[in-house]
Image (tube, rainbow, N blue to C red):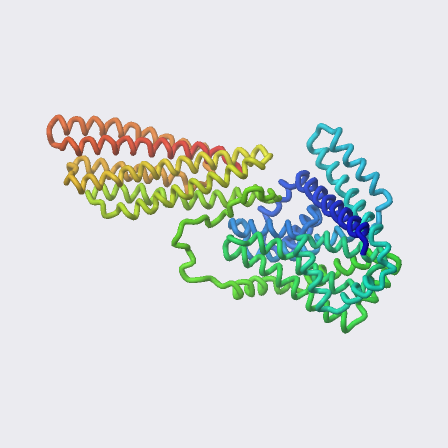
Length: 544
């Protein structure tokens, strides 16, 4: 193989992959938010799930991207494992659209498509129009890449060595392994199928030798989802197991059928003069038939995934960690569905943070009433976890905001950022209150009966204020008004209790050091109310 052939292949492959990425990005930008909305509102209806999975994958032209998105949705709790089964089945059907487009053989007008798309992107000032121009340009560049690869490989038709190598793919084991490994490397079954079609168009491989490579490509495409599931929940990992199991079962079935029946010949005869269409049709047949065969067993696939990756006792980690979001790595590509995944994931993490914060407020006031520092270590441990969550969630939101262009989503994430900060501040004030118990132990400080009753009232209304946040759900104006009323009550109580304390000190029924601690506690109590109101105001602005 000469250097010119290698350079031509690499250049053509570069154009092909770039065109596909460009087309996918344009489609995502033009319809991404609508597709996210469809997935978010998905029901558990199997047929609807398959249709949605196929439709979205047909639009973004990547089953890997759809599966990665589904993994994220399952990890964040937006989709159940069962719902994921139907979408994955549909995704395998939707990914065949690229091969069918290539089989249409529109290479002759590829330069025109590329020129028209680039002209629209360059000269149009409307962002929406630019997205559609990007789709057209990507399609044109994709076909230019195919033409370039085909031209580069044309001399190989006379190479006995290369032809001999291609015939080796007729061995089921070799063909499946080559298809799986190559697709895993480039992480796109659509691209690898397109390259296989290019070989067929050039007369370098026929369907009987290509069919097993094609089946292996369906397995190799699962690698992207497998990588995306690293560091996610067990259900998210099970989603990738379902994807892999689906394609392995399909490969086993079709390999046996192709060996024992004339299926390959039938598909060839359907379009005898179009080898690219033969591969596209076999690809479509593989995924449609496998989906129809496995559709009745969707729930069993989910159960099988649970059996392969069962629950573990005490799965909740002892160490600090995020449960619902996977931190974005620096330089990682921002993919479709990230905003929707992040929205639900962050909300769930903030709910965890809110529960820890509420627990610390309750424990801290109780500790002061008991006059003992016995609860201090538990409160301190919670506070460290709250600080960790604040840091990691804030970092995650900052990364999301850099990429997010949707105004509503940006506003929601900004609100989440401020909610996170206010929860952390409530945790700080609860920690302050608990720290007073150490001084009380050390200096044998006690509060009067009246002061303890007031502390009990502080504890009660503080918890009531937090409970009115309704587990951090979006708040109505009426609910926000109730929280505002509680915050005003806290301000009034603070002023009243401060006057009461001054009177007790004047009457010498309260120790001086106890009075200082009590005054500090009132400040923390008042600030808890302020931060709860801040959170309520942010929740009232969030719109799903």
